[in-house]
Image 1 (cartoon, rainbow, N blue to C red):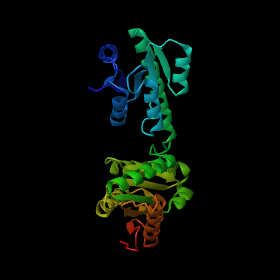
Image 2 (spheres, rainbow, N blue to C red):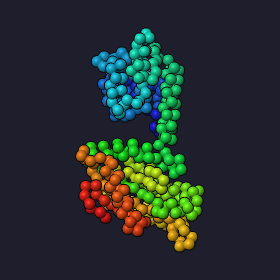
Image 3 (tube, one colour):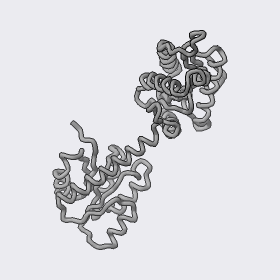
Image 4 (cartoon, helix red, strand yellow):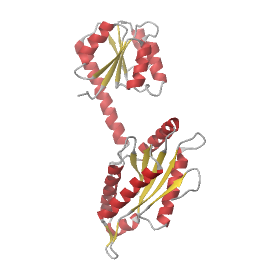
Length: 306
């Protein structure tokens, strides 16, 4: 069973790699590199949680390796602990100024290595919990708007590089203001939670993200998802919300429904991810205008509408 964290050890001495690996093997998954260049490659490939880096290495020393890691957006946030025989203040200061999280002097002591690594992994875990909380909508437990905006930017770039289709849905609870006015905000919150649960259950593919955009509006990002697939999934959500039969108005026995607008595109450099949202939002407007409780699809490139 894999450990919760992974640590990359970069050291040109095989014996040091083996010693540190043996010390930490029961607590973390170990990745080893025998040079700075190899360490940078493995950091990019495996995205370790923490890097233990020797300073004195041939060709690319630890300081140069640290500099390479800090210049790449994919590795710049990985904490680095220098482990070195250099015991002067100037080199320790240099390492910390380069952005290292800690500096451990050789000879290696198992208890020190374990304690320092455990401390930094604890800090990493706490940071991730705070990051996660900052991107979650507290009422629905879906991603919040901040997380949506981060994700749509990265997925737009990735799908453009892969030449894959990116679909986006904008979803709205029909007549929600009237529901709140009639039943009160506490009841409205329960509706939001029930609808969110259905959306969350239907957008669980790799790379999918469903978020609360604001009020009673939600967005769903669907990488590598065609028009046909997107429409199937949105229609399923619409049907499941309708089947919950949440009474919307006692007088005429309406039930809570949702409407959705979907747009799909293979991202290109002459377009922006904002255009995808705008198009999906226009499709939502048409779904509302045409009677609600339905989904409409629109192409970003032309006026094709279904």
